[in-house]
Length: 169
Image 1 (cartoon, rainbow, N blue to C red):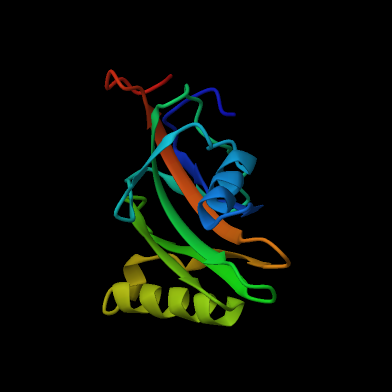
Image 2: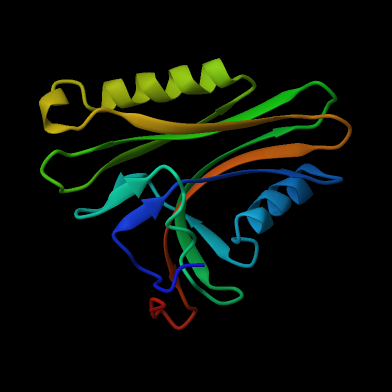
């Protein structure tokens, strides 16, 4: 866990979970990335100014308490039948002037599909403004169902906020 709830690096975390149901598999992936006790608030994929993306995930999850809101962008894909694949990914572009960027999230049943969808979306989002953005980057993660449901989850946590509305420091 990080010592600050708000920071200038957004980590990109990736885990695979499993369980007796798809929901249990999703929760298992969240628990493995230390996000299982937060209420997720899904954001619309705009990277704030002055913020960079950490594809290694080493920046870690913002510190918070049980039930806090975790503002994040995420992609999740489930597989429930033996042999079925689950792939999820997040891609991003950042402005060269440091004034933010854009995330995209895609899910599917193959690594190639998710990777190609991320690349195509990012290419379309910056069309006509390519010089204003750094080259695109992405993280894709997958799992194959063996005998119980699995969930591939890629999550970019921004910050935690307590129920009283105060960001955790």
